[in-house]
Image (cartoon, rainbow, N blue to C red; front, side, top):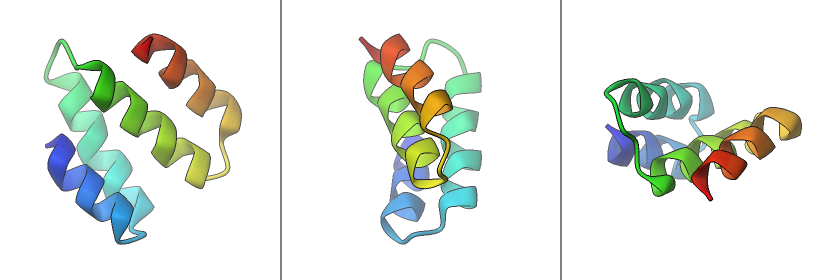
Length: 59
């Protein structure tokens, strides 16, 4: 799911990217990379405070 989300991110389809990355997170025990990807998507959606929270979780 994260890979699909990241492809959408690279294509600039940020809402679809967010949807798929969120599904990857919701599936349980997401990797740091998945959490980082969510932060990256949120930053592009002009939500830097939310992005920072995800990046901090990824550490």
